[in-house]
Length: 73
Image 1 (cartoon, one colour):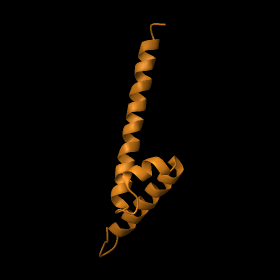
Image 2 (cartoon, rainbow, N blue to C red):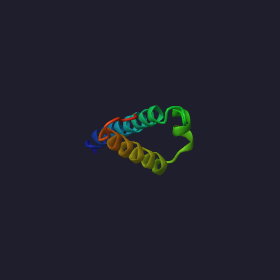
Image 3 (tube, rainbow, N blue to C red):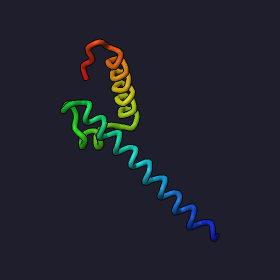
Image 4 (cartoon, rainbow, N blue to C red):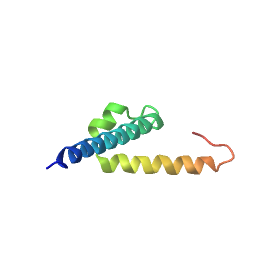
């Protein structure tokens, strides 16, 4: 039983870290969507799968544009 407080502390630390990753991803998506969808709508109306697909798309576009002679970010 002495391990239980440490396990709970670890669980909450992991949850805090995961929440931070989600918020950072939402902020990044809202920025790169340039007003097409805002932070609140991303948070409330998109699923994890949808946000992941958007992140993959944005990363592919950034990578493709970085190789262009005249990138458009």
